[in-house]
Image 1 (tube, rainbow, N blue to C red):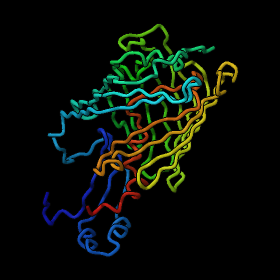
Image 2 (image 1 turned 45 degrees about the vertical axis):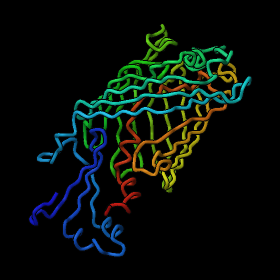
Image 3 (image 1 turned 120 degrees about the vertical axis):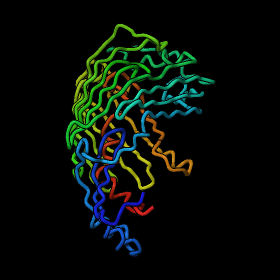
Image 4 (image 1 turned 180 degrees about the vertical axis):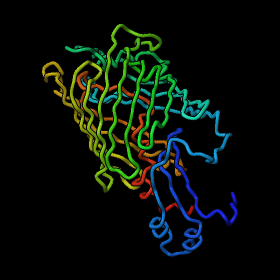
Length: 345
């Protein structure tokens, strides 16, 4: 795209899934003056403005060919299970087909279908002996079918205000629960702090995955997120969990320059250690590996896993596709400055 010399100011809005994240303002004269500067990236950052992006821009250039859009992938998967006293490591593996279809800005229809080729998670004799609602401890029963519809959902994301972001998702949200989820996030572009609230009404899915059982629950959390600097991130979630217990989860994460993320979390609720069972309370380690690090190609995809000493029912939180915070912060000031060295590419 070549613009006439009369155009002096470029205002570029970063967008992720229809969410306008920030507005980057660059002057043409600065680009021309700094192009061959030995410290061009840092010098350009010093004279570039990064500010709030309005939900919509009058006279903005929009590519009408972006929608409808779809993407899909098919490939192998591994699903590990740890710390079974009878067999410390169990693994299922097979082929997974996943895809998304976006008919219009902000709308997404997505899902994942898995076919197990081998594994032994479903062979475990340890079914739930929980003293509270078995929202996670019946995982063995969910692992006994070879063909599984892991998720199937419709989602809408939009930006109601300059600093706010919203999401509504409905369908089979995860392997064990389906229903409706809504989220609202407040996150200014230059702020290290973000605040959010999420509410869900869900029912437990059948072990076959195609219907629902009788158990239903209203669950949700108020969340605070903070970027400490140096790659350290904190998150505090306070609310009601899947078994109806009330409590809080504290998560601390370190994000490295190569995109790897390692973090730990702990959850304390009003479920006593006796009722919780083995492990006393929920805790574990999260690991996220960027796919680009493995393949050497540019992509935003990543592979994540959670390692727990034991999975019980207390402190169990719903897994929802497309939560807002990570995708919103990826286009805000701190993230843009961290990746600014590639601005001339």
